[in-house]
Image (cartoon, rainbow, N blue to C red; front, side, top):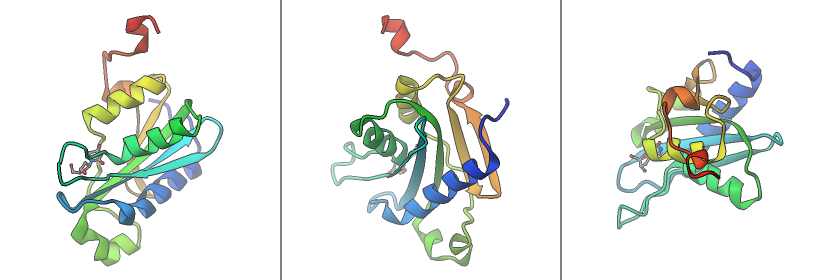
Length: 154
Ligand code: THU
């Protein structure tokens, strides 16, 4: 599918998401996730995953970014970059050079939350291993035949 943004915009989102990885609070999984959400007004909200000793109150990085944005009055979004890695990777030279071992696709719950606030044909999800190695998907590719506000007439 066609990409709608410039290369430098995708790269900047990947860079910002990657820089967030050290802020994840992940004593239970030791898996760090960072997200950078571009709003339609051009601003960027970041997020990390935040876990909890009671497990189920944990929140993913993508939802942290989206909820931060919504609570700041922003409801229109262009794209989100998502990156993740195990804790041990954060101390490597590769990480210092902005390189991650794997792509980190968003979980189903986060895809559904994206669906709430975006047009699945328009909103883009960037999965990256580095600023030079990323894939761009439309939400409709990662959440086909989705249920959304229109199904409830909203
Ligand atoms: N995680 C995210 O932050 N985003 C996702 O979409 C996938 C999973 C987090 C949740 C948990 O803190 C850790 O990664 C391991 O599942």
